[in-house]
Length: 135
Image (tube, rainbow, N blue to C red; front, top):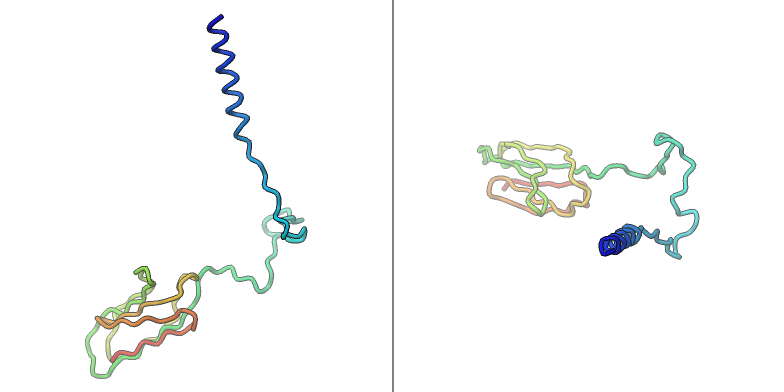
């Protein structure tokens, strides 16, 4: 009798523990309209169409301009970093030559640190152009 009552208690506890973990679906907030819900008539992934002005890219393109100084004939590293120190672009650059390129940076980046040798300058990413002049 003792073992059957223990078995019944263990079975009841097991059943309760499995049935208590049912995920409840949250109701849509009152501010969401019926047209904003995720209803779709697409049957395949290729049927999904995005708006014409939607950008799939998670990066931005920035024009990088380096203006060298005629008196500086040494070669140093030209480096572009984000504020966390992640290197986004680097190259060996002669100090007396100009350089221009378009680089891709992460879309969340707001500030860039451009350095050439021991000279560093901060630039905003929002302008689309970064111009660094070697002095």
